Length: 264
Image (cartoon, rainbow, N blue to C red):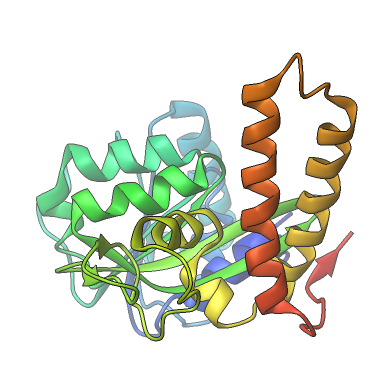
């Protein structure tokens, strides 16, 4: 992969960056994303960083080979620590790492995180906990896409700093912009759980890749449930029934949605 040949996930990240933004790509790895954004003049300047010296060396080599050393700065940095001044308008990108790590990076210096006009994140684990955890950081999800690539499902989110929203289904504070209540027959707490689990924006937008994920998940859950003896594994069986029921709530709402974005 080069700066001209990004994965579907990174192309989705790039597409969420508002044109004209100065980009701060944290955990840049080989800096392919920064190179892509600058070469296409989506971003005038990029500041790429990684905590590991190896990727920093490789990223620097790639930037120089592309002749972009005057437009892309590569630095070894731990998260967003040490960013004393942000050049505006600015986008912070955190992609390709686990959800807990992204929350940790943002929470370690939340004042700096709030200095950015927008944040693009792609957590690769613990997605429900990640969405829920954004509330404590006063960050809200304004846009979300799901990507299916090489047999795996990924989520990409655009965040904005500022007050979190009141939940569409009631008084609960949530980390996503809400409109209509999608599940009026469920309690506030149950709605929030489903929104955190599958993504309010993905559900409300009838995201076609989410529809595909729901089918995949439902098949896996039913297979596991069919192999369990409820008498011997009551707690796990009850948990699976709840998971299948949540899946079916969303699947019913998503009925008729065309599948898309397959990169297998």
